[in-house]
Length: 92
Image (cartoon, rainbow, N blue to C red; front, side, top):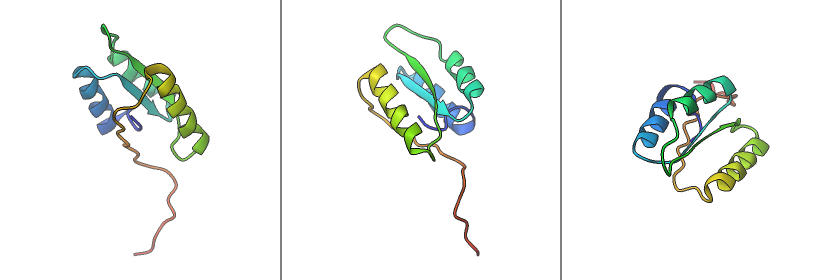
């Protein structure tokens, strides 16, 4: 789940985890990622992975997918909660 190191994304990730899902906590801030991973303590047959990635960087996205597949074997659900970055901008 991208953008899950704070705010709405964090709340969604923790809710999915509380329902028994394996989750990948990701964003740009390693400290925040670690804090959310620590909130999702390991359970029997359930894992949480923290990965630092910037969705504006293609290589980061490729590595995120590769790490997720390596850890869990597949991706069942993607929650793309990206809320920032450099925009093209528009005049209104």
